[in-house]
Length: 119
Image 1: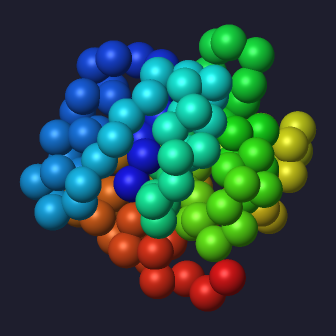
Image 2 (image 1 turned 90 degrees about the vertical axis):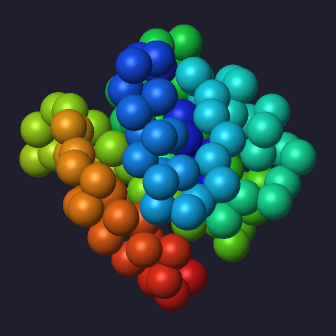
């Protein structure tokens, strides 16, 4: 799994939660770094923040990840109102989402649902 989050504290908490759930986790702080990791392959899930600095949003990253690896599952996370994001980007129709701050139990459920989803 690849976790992409620009806030180092949030990223470390996410990694710790996922590792405690038994997942192997690589991490990146922005879309450009994530694409380099994704290019190496081997990831089943991309968990990425929607709003990130550096010129590439999580939605753009997710779309590029799917172009590289059509079978990869994507779970977006955000601290913003998802309805506002959906109006601007249509993100809710493209990828599942989890709201920050998330609890470990909620993260476990959403990750499992995303990995188990078809296509």
